Length: 175
Image (cartoon, rainbow, N blue to C red; front, top):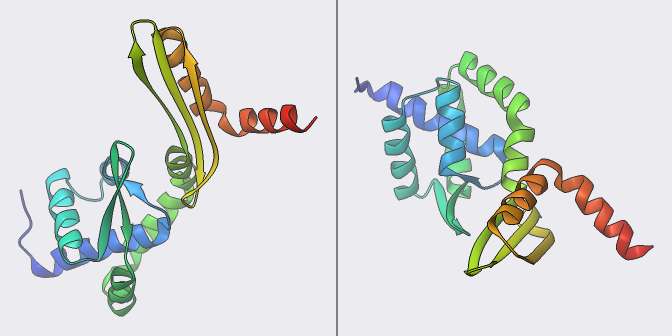
């Protein structure tokens, strides 16, 4: 089940560094896992092992953000990748480039548009809506709503349509 070939292990870790370098923004464990598994790049257990090893070697760092941990490549990881990128098969690089071109917008949207809610009291919920671009908040909105149904509906609508809603809010404020 597990590959003990040292060359393959090194290629897989370099491939992960390549993915982090191409993405260029912090990405959660669940996002990188989904990307890797959906595209059959490696299995879950090896991915988690490699992430731990890359983190321990300080090639990537894990930054807490809200309720998640976000990974980002370090300068040390970029430098190492630049020395050894030629060890990644060109076919793998092309596959990753093609996949990232297709899925980059989805990854960015999932990272930049955030919507969550918490229960404050029996009939009161706090909805938190954000759009973040390169760690800079573009909009941060907190709303108090009367019930769980409203909170879920607002979060869903925000995730689906944040750019348009943001534009409408700005227009309402400057008119």
